[in-house]
Image (tube, rainbow, N blue to C red):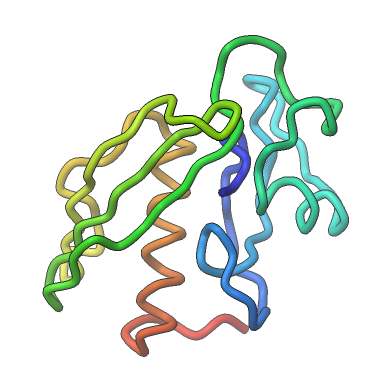
Length: 138
């Protein structure tokens, strides 16, 4: 699970599989219109792993989600079916299927919200790299 406010920008080299597939560098968008660049410690401990409520000073109060999960539920070569779950306190907050066109490099039905949409794209990019069907992380 990644933080629901983390907007992944660039994959980082790493060998473990994390919630977005790879560790990602990116921008915190918890405060609307004030993106912030987290340092390496924050990226590793909070942004890439989620559940930062009560730990991250930038995490908004309120009833929003704590984490985002993705999984590949079907891989047919030219198309992928991804399932996403936004979580709050380890329980589903919102969820749904996403269909991805590999040749088109895009979701047929993108998830709601620019940040979750980018997280889903980052997850697919990591998945395709692991399967040898995407670009290598440098």
